Amino acid sequence: MELIKKLRDSTGSGIVDCKKALSENNDNLEASVKWLREKGILKAQKKQDRVTNEGVVSFYNSSSNTNLTVCKIKCETDFVAKNDDFLNFAEILSKTIHEDKNINDYGTHKDLADLNINNKSLNDCLTELIAKIGENIQIVSYKKYFSEKSIFITYLHNKYNSNCSKIGSVVEISTDNTASALKLVDELKVIAMQISAMKPMGIDENSIDSKIIEDEKDIILKQMNNVPDDKKDQIIRGKLNKFLKENTLLGQALITDPKKSVSSFLSEISQNNNITLNITSMDLYTI
Image (cartoon, rainbow, N blue to C red; front, top):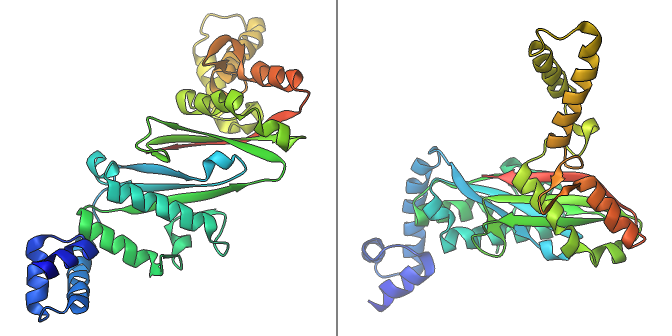
């Protein structure tokens, strides 16, 4: 029983599997771990084609607001997404990606082929976790954030723990005074919340795909059957402006004070603190 307990503690496998592993390997712990891993690999391979519709967005070092990493990892069920083993793996993976200087600043699982976690290959870690948890697990994407002239404001909605959630956002705000901007993080947090809540298509008109704007114009035109030709341009511009206000981050009404736009809110903070603040990028992560 003592050997079974040791094997369970080191592999996370069930009592029956541990007992069989020890029996097959003359009570040799090292050989039993290898045997379980080999069996686990067979089980895991069968699960790696199953659909993954749940998971987490994992943030690492986001409290620094200057240097962080986000990783998106999927599993099959919400139950596993909240599982401690899965969440711990998400956090360790995000930390390892963040600290590895040899990989690209952003990418997918294909860019992580040479990544090692605690002296084990990522593939071996995934295989063991799939075998232990019993669900397919996929690393969808990751991105590292760093800039000497910007701060990054983050937000996780309905967190599973301090660093993981199904919805997360990052907004990059460039500035002429990083030290002063970092003191404004709490005030600026609402902009990251805005992205998660309102899901803007772009920062401003210039960052929205021109095809989306053209399609919106076509929709507006088709709705103007009885409008005189000389009035059409004015109506199109008015409705298009309304569309852009509702779908651009800077144009949207602030979720905490709808009388202000995000743009006017940011300008107000800039003026009050004698600092330049401009939104230069945003990312919304969802599962």
